[in-house]
Image 1 (cartoon, rainbow, N blue to C red):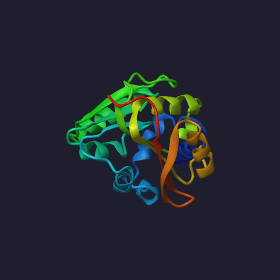
Image 2 (cartoon, rainbow, N blue to C red; image 1 turned 180 degrees about the horizontal axis):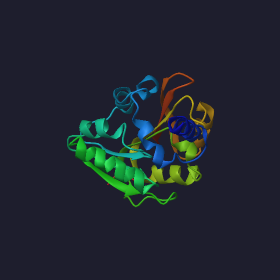
Image 3 (cartoon, rainbow, N blue to C red; image 1 turned 135 degrees about the horizontal axis):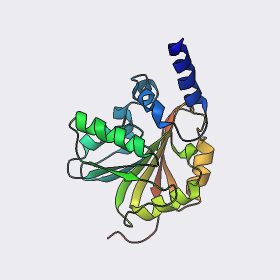
Length: 202
């Protein structure tokens, strides 16, 4: 009976719109996720170089984070989340896996305390649809990215907050980004957008 109740609550967590509850964050580590998007495939789509500064928004427990961090030899990965419990879970996993080269940032849901032109890549996986202040986030992404930097948005089948390809293109192209690349299919896909203008890189 207890198992049945837990199963129902987990299914409810996956089916409910909004921020994914941290108490079910362990479900985000199930290997089944590889069917939709593996860490290796994501890294290929991000085209990360070893000296890049990379921001992951909404990392959850760090399913993709550790492989990305290990790709960065002289660069840095910053994990940003609005739930401190998620960041702590990710931090513990990094420690257990002996993976360094990462730092953790608690978001306020509107702005980020990072310098202009700092990041080479910003990425999100099944996250942007949960964000209430999408346009504020995208303005911040434009500010923080180097000229020519990439914002990568992956959306997965079954996510109740999943955004369509058209919605994402409309949203980013209003804010100084150009559509750059598309991977996957209509059910599971990654869209990359490139920053067009903005301040000169420092």
